[in-house]
Amino acid sequence: SPSRRWTLAGEYQLDDRDSARADGGRHLVGGVLRMPSLASGGWRPSLRWKHAPADHSGEVVTGIKGTIAPSVQLEIGVPVIYGTPGTYFRDVLVETVASDEDEDNLVPLDNVVMVLLALSLSVSF
Image (cartoon, rainbow, N blue to C red; front, top):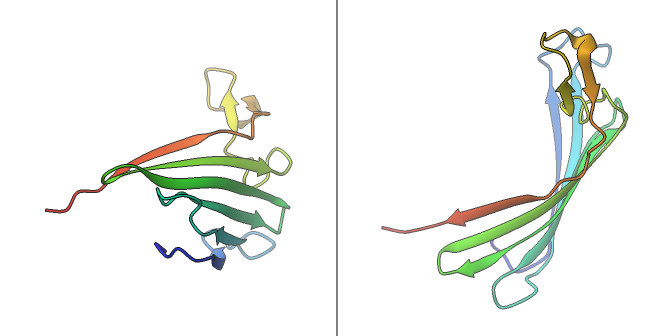
């Protein structure tokens, strides 16, 4: 929302592609909080949270988005992933340590914090 006011939203997702799972699929809950702009450039801080209740893993992203030039916006986010290795959100954080694709040769990474930068250019014709 481009609104300059506080924004609060919640979400529930169900991925039922794997119906053989004991919990009937993958349930995710989440929420977003956006605060009013901090400065004249429209810099808006935000917080996004996603959680998988079945395995107690999730992701929290703090960020800020604002205008840096006419029609150019910069968005900076710092996601933090929590949960034990092998859980829904930590499952993708693996690296191959051998040449074959055997799952026994995958090692969970310990890095669960990163910085994301996005640059958006919007031009009207």
